[in-house]
Length: 280
Ligand code: AMP
Image (cartoon, rainbow, N blue to C red; front, side, top):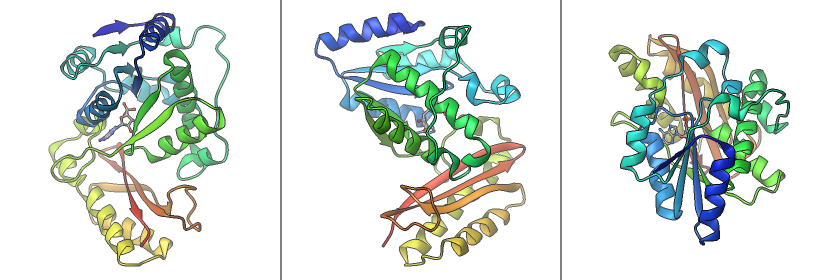
């Protein structure tokens, strides 16, 4: 595995691989790798010849305190990448990504403001900006993203189509623990009791999924059921919930699939999860 720290070096190495006929797969991450990230790496290894994992805690997409508190463990990440035979670990520092004078943003306009985006447009603008930069720095054939973050996924697909990036976006199913909880770097910051309480999140999502499969279509009533199930767990404070059309993120649009989404606080930490269900 090669560890590369600058955009010029990674692009030169990847272009050489491509000249040798290799297909390139990119897995963008914030580091602190867990089994959810491993699912992305394994998928990339299956259908790309060369796997590049980028690990960069993007300062633009965090409030300052959250940026500083974000868990980091480069040594452990290195071991994970070696074990899974990642070919290139792209590990840039902030100054290299955002040199003095950096002043451009990539924004997906309407879609970014939907779901819970209205109050955190700046966050999604930062996500699409860094992903666009990574696409230009690495020029992958495919890029792998988790269904764990459905709004991010839909924005990146939109950006790729709108800006004509010649890149296929591959959506990888959410990897879960035995009790159904989606794996996340934040889970490691919970106490045992908080971690137990988090089990209510997948349980409530599954309950709403079952109701939709049985033919229930009243989304605002379904959302209320979701909220009351989540509130039945006393350590949980509900922050945001939605039952919306998966493609447009609108409640009143009925397409092929419905997205059931929830964000909660447990012990001051914000955790999100979602399910997508085909409309019967
Ligand atoms: P992050 O480092 O949290 O930005 O995550 C990097 C990528 O891993 C994103 O595309 C996430 O959607 C994906 N991811 C995070 N958690 C999981 C999970 N439990 N299962 C599958 N993919 C995940």
